Amino acid sequence: MTQKKSFIYTIITAVLLVFSLATHAAEKKTSFKVAWSIYAGWMPWAYANDKGIVKKWADKYGIEIEVVQMNDYIESINQFTAGEFDACAMTNMDALTIPAAYGVDTTGLILGDYSNGNDGLVIKEGDSVEDIKGHNVNLVELSVSHYFLARALDIHGMSERDVTVVNTSDADAVSTFMTDDVTVAAVWNPQLGIILDEAPKATEVFTSKEIPGEIIDMMAANTEVLEANPEFGKALVGAWFETLALMQGDSAEAKAARTYMAEQAGTDLAGYEAQLDDTMLFYTPESAYEFASNKDLIGFMDKVRQFSFDKGLLGEGSPSPDVIGMEFGDASVLGDKSNIKLRFDTTYVKMAADGEL
Picture 1: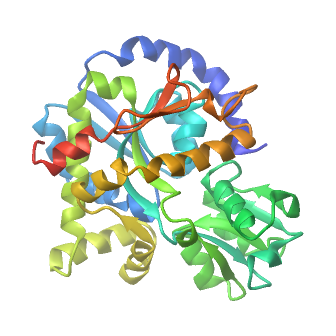
Picture 2 (picture 1 turned 90 degrees about the horizontal axis):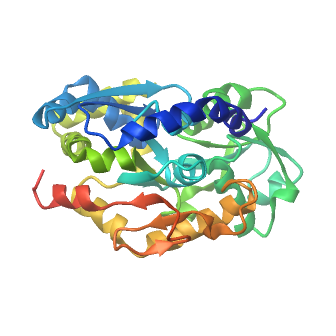
């Protein structure tokens, strides 16, 4: 059973919880839960939480924020969708196809980076995308890695009919690739880096550098919770950019911060910095705001929704990619204006850029 299918069964049992929470979601509250999982661009959350930066900003706004590391990425989003978390680190595509597709109004609060090499397609025998023809490809099915594979195939004049997708948890990506049965995988860092370091026959034949801006890593929040509790958004944005400011440069403090993140990610400083080189991280609120406000974002999300519709990820019986509305920072809408379930809100990042937090 795929993780996505597993989620469908999970959501049936969780739906009553979602509806019960919906009656309270718009209320003011003082305690919040945030989920994140291991990935180069999300490691600042580990540092911010463990070193008291999140608490500092939460205290500023008179709230409490519990930050929870999840070992399984898709499960973290499933739990966010079921109402267990108020915010969760996820990609743009997964925000659309899981919470938004299941009716949970979701806001991209911080568009922190886009993958610029942190996702890769690796093969044991061959040196081109064409060489994966006829192979099984191990990846997290129906996730952003699936989208990444589809884009690689399309760019090289191929389609999914040329390969067989094998669903594999991100937690198992490295161990399965080390077996003789697995010959091709689409993975993200840190798993990608480990495979390239430890599998002598592994060759990277396609990377996310070839589709810049399309795989976006963000902190997403429940829209109703955020609207009722703007302090929550302010605290998260404030903690995030304070942490990014601390980790930049060659000072002892910056190196110590990156070293801590590296250790939490299971690598060393050199390994983590190599991953950061493949991440277009927006270190300042100004750069994050510029990216989130760029009209190109609409084009990126159009590609993502087209893929998601083709894969049946926007809900059973969806008549078109327009079924879910997506609202952008300039109030423009892609899709159904009466069913907006994914929003890219630049308000809080703009406040940080203007020194208003």
